[in-house]
Structure formats: structure tokens, C-alpha cells
Amino acid sequence: MDLMKTCEEVTLLIESENYKVLSRQDRLATKIHLMMCKGCKNYKKDSKLIHEMLQVKFKDLSSYEFSLEEKVALRDKLSKEL
Amino acid sequence: MNTTKGISHTDLVENHSDYLLSFAMTKLNDLDLAKDLVQDTLVSALTKLDTFEKRSKLRTWLTSILNRKIIDHWRKAETRYTDPISSFFDQDEKKGHWLMEKSTSGNFETIVDDISKQETMTELSDCLDTLPAKWRGIIASKFLEEKESEQICNDFDITSSNLWVIMHRAKLLLRDCLKNKWI
Image (cartoon, rainbow over all chains, first blue to last red; front, side, top):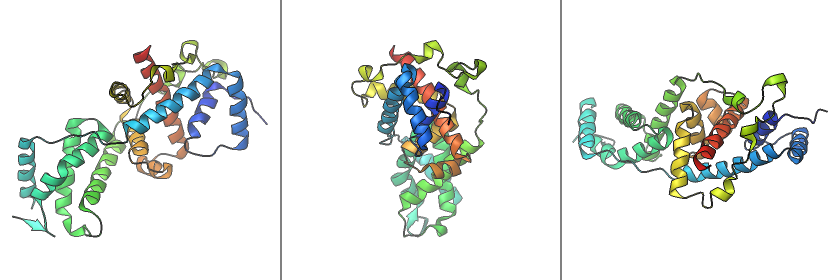
């Protein structure tokens, strides 16, 4: 059983964990790696925070409006389609 | 006034166009493109009003047409990009360890005391705009519409392992971009 993973592999596993349940071996390998590697530990923390930021960012629609002129043009365009 | 099923083009424009534009902008962040797609959406909606079933809400139906158009746009969008992985991890001898300058922590939590701050969100938007359009679309599908991974993979015509790889690369780039803004 190969439990030694590279930082590239471990950070990919950290991301995949948001979408699927990791296998026991992958979970263990990640845990071992994180005990030894500060860079990946930092990544995991930052990744979680960015995940939360994205949740906040996309929670509400940002509000946009067509101008009055654009609406008139849109109505004209649509009435021609009928 | 021209109406079909009691829905007029004035109704579509007055009551729904701004909502559709906001939806498209949240997903695309390109105002001209968003306006074009909303117009296309309203035109197709009018031409197929007879397929609209009153059981669903008009807005939901319109949003689904718009969404289809956005997905079509992303599918057609240029997808060639340089995999950023080699700027983060040492590719020599397949070691795959962090390159020195990329391994340091952003110490994000000490910098972002309130992640919902307007300024932080603006910075995040700027960084999202630096990603390939399709990646941004995938992120929007996940976080805005909370779509299941399987649905996202179908929409974007990718496998689930592609999805994890894309999210991984996107996170690396976002983290790097935010770090550069903050430190």
C-alpha cells in the first residue's frame, strides 16, 4: 500500500473531498502527509476559506438592470418576432 | 397587444428581463454577452410559448432557457489553456512538491476577518475573472445553483475526475491571485 503522496496529489485529494468520499487509503495518506507538510496544511486551511468565500459570493444574484432605452428596443425586437 | 397564453412581450421585458440579466451576469460577468443571451432567451421563449406549461412558473421556465444558452456558450468557448500546475509544484523527477515561493501560507484567516466584506468580494470577483471562462462557469454552477457534480459534468461535457482537477487548478490560481492582492 503506497501511502506516500506528493503535494500535488494531496492537494488534489483535498479538493476532491468536496465532491466525493475518499477511499480509506486516500484518507490515511492525506492525514499522514498533512502531519509532515506545512505547505499542504496551509493549503487545506486556505482552500476551506476560499470555498466559504465562494459560497458567500454566489449566495445572491448581483443586481443588474436594462436601461429604459434598452427595454424599449427589446420590446420592439420581440414584437417583430410575433 | 399580442399575447399568447396571457403572456405578452411587454410582460416578459418588464417583469423578467432584469432578473434574467442579473442571473446571466452572476454566471458570466460579461455585460454585453449577458444582454445578448437574455435577448436570445426572450426571443426563443416567445417562439415556443406553446410548449410552456402553466404548471411551472414563467420565471423558472425562462431561467431554464437562459441557462441552456449559457451552457451552450461555455461549451463553444475556447477551452485551450496552459495547465498551471507546473508553476505550483516541482515537476522535476516527478517529485510533485510545492515550489518554495508557493508553499507559504497566505494566512488568509488573519487577513480576512470578515469574508463577506464588500472589498473582499470585489477582490474575489477580480480573481474569478482571471480564470478560463469555462472554469468560472463550473464554479458558478456549483456555488450559485448548487448543482450536483454529476449534473455539472453533463452540462460541461467533462468526466468527474476532470471536474476535481479543474476545481483543484482553479483553487490554486484563486489562492495565488488573492495572496498577491493581500500580501
